[in-house]
Length: 593
Image 1 (cartoon, rainbow, N blue to C red):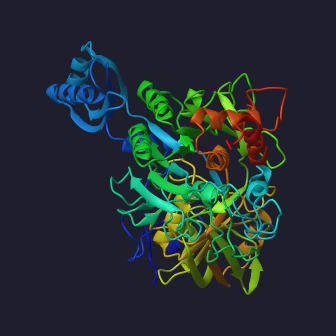
Image 2: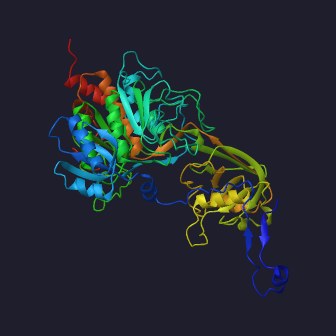
Image 3: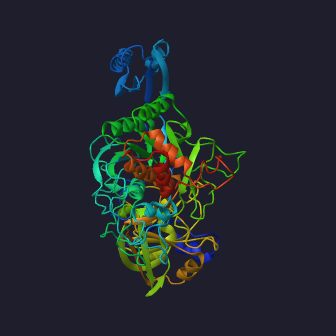
């Protein structure tokens, strides 16, 4: 089925005379193309600004009991025309929608300590699927070995948990993140409860019920780093085994608090509400691989309150580092609150080097592996690619958020993929595989993102997309479609060199197959944080009578120094070490007879 019309009646005559270029071809969407296109890619901060409700956090003076103060706070908000959404008696605070008039009235109330706007928070990670030639989930991951976790519960190295060794048993860990994949074999046995603070229900899956799409697996990855169970039924890349991975503390009880949506963004109100819920559920540890650039007085009070209730909070330092002390932004929050309420964690490579992205500062406490960390993920949005053209295989890489799928059809070259017109007459609504080059601008002069290219090809009738890198030094690149969507096509990238070859194979049969995987590598301080959380759980399970600050002290004093002597802004006290921490525990707090 063709889907092009020519503008102008004298097209052939004009073109033959050569007096001017042929009129432009206007393309029409294929009949089965969905009209509601994907959201135009915008900046992360803009996206969150639109999604965060117009809420404020109002904190009152505690002149009476906590519950009475919170009731009075809520009454005052309602009296001035606001609407209360959350009440936090421990903090004497509420989250509320306020009209400008209501806010002005409350600001004049002497009992009001602060009124601050709700603000966005973000996940701290970037993804990379495991290479096809290295790595195997059957082995203890490099991260496990680097923090000495295997030396604690498998001292003899026989691959079996040692009897009576600390594993984190009877310690509840609350992962405040993007939720989890409830189908994943690594997490099912450890899960004891959850709450969704995004969709306001008791199902904390990393799933958007409106669009019916899974998220990127950020929360699943961080949770599995702590508690993975050597799941044996997960799907992996062809070069890898299916015996799963093991977490730092495989015996912990997992609580899941979903505060980030499938795009990896959330808000401050959800963080405070989740922290309160985690305490109610008996969590000893809270792990937060997220944050924001700015602090908030009520949030700071919430983390201090959690410490006073016996919880140790561990948070990522942030991925906005510059590597230059003169321009370093300092730590993100809540990590930036530092001692005593929050233990801040930065990232290091497996060689113990500081990656530029890991934010530094005096509040930094510890570091842990945070580059190319292998752990569990959500298969719907984490895939590997198998590409054949003319019966010849080509190395390819699935774009982030590209869906699982398999399609065989004719290869059509489509320029830079700005519209169906770039594909010429070979593109039909019967389906084809579109080859497009990276780069280019749209009609408005804006850059052609991969999302725009994929959407334009979908409308033109493509069933799969191949993107050729325009950088000969960058291999297959590291590309993303930006966010989950039910409209995406299977999309994969190839190198500059292979792209040049594919352009000469138009008309050949091409197969693009994207297979979902249950394991992936992620990079960021998000990945470092759960390593420290897991080690804390090991120590606490060895001596449940310890306080939160005692556990923190043991981790800091036993850390492996990676920089100048003593604590520094780049590595804090150093690399967290599980075996060393437990040895220090025995010396510092010997067991009572």
